[in-house]
Amino acid sequence: MNNPILLIVVAQMFGTSLWFSTNGVLKQIEQIWLLSTSDLGLLTNSVQFGFIVGTLLFSVTGFADKFKPSRIVMLCCFLGATSNALIVFEEISFTFVIFSRLVVGVALAGIYPIGMKLIISWNPQKAPNTLGLLVGMLVLGSSLPYLIRALGISFDWQYTVILTSGLCYIAGITIFLMGDGPHLIINKKLSFRLLDQFSELSKNKKYVASAVGYFGHMWELYAFWTCVPILIAISVSHHRIQDQEFIISLLSFLIIGLGFISCVLGGILAKSLKSSRVASLSLAFSLSICLIYPLLGNVSFFLDLVLLMLWGFFVISDSPQFSAISASVCPQHLVGTALTTQNCVGFSISMITIFLTTHFHESLGLYFVWILLPGPVLGLIFFSRQFGFFRLKTYSISQH
Image (cartoon, rainbow, N blue to C red):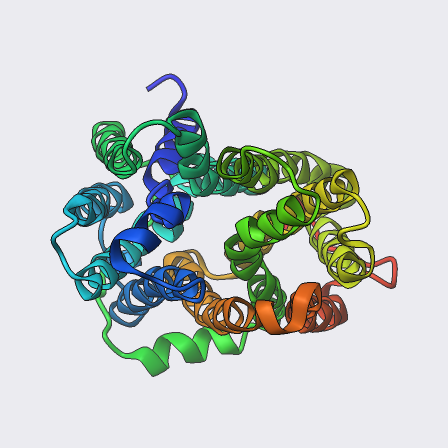
């Protein structure tokens, strides 16, 4: 393959389009199964929980470091695409929909974090850049169902779901045909001993600091993405904007999708500012916007849109840097386990804020977004103690 990195990141976008495939058609799903707004959190959290189960499985068993990542990604793409497509039948129960979304989450655990190891196996020296592209494609994949819905507003909602499944099948086939990179290291010893793996990782202070920074980032990220349509709907309703369904879908895609640009730019800036500085600045800007949004929200629709776009830009730009730092400070034979463990804990944390924000947004008004503040605040403090932010010391991937 002439450009395996490009193929991986495009396949990543197609594969991760499953993540919010139901969120993009939530209005139609609400009508079919008579759901409440809080059920949006239940739909999203079922994927998150499945992702946690999947990442925990990979972490505990060491599968992420034992088997070829291209094979794992392919199988998980097929599993996720099939499970996602099953919800198009309106005769099924909502319980089955939740189970289907849970299986999608399990599959995503083999698409996203294992995809990180796959892309590193092709060029580990450019991890900040390539992981920036990879996470950027996760962002585009997550926002893609909103764009599909906006463009096909006159079509049945099932087309959005079927199209995302089709893209995921294409992703699996592409990764299988491409294979693994020349720098792939396979851990020949398959271990099921959770404590042994965690013990080695927990003694690595730099990994722990990077992971804690990532946990703070995850406290905010997925809850924000889940609430983007809610925040737009509040603003659209307050300012009496017409064509609300189209506007909400299109702006949700734009606000979430802006994170792609920030991930790519973050990878470029990491060369000069260093990865730790990019991650720290992203956390700082994101928490600042979170702090001021309830104070300035609903002043004007234009201001709401600007603030949400800035928030969507900065809320994700630190993610690839945390992953790159974690991968660089760990022994090579534990990179897969380290990344899947980090993701497992991070997504567990995200379930808490998804539940809180979707259940209290009506009673707290715009101030419900302050539920997201503790994550980036604490993440910035703990991460900076090890890698530096308020002092000159920073961490460069290229130096390690």
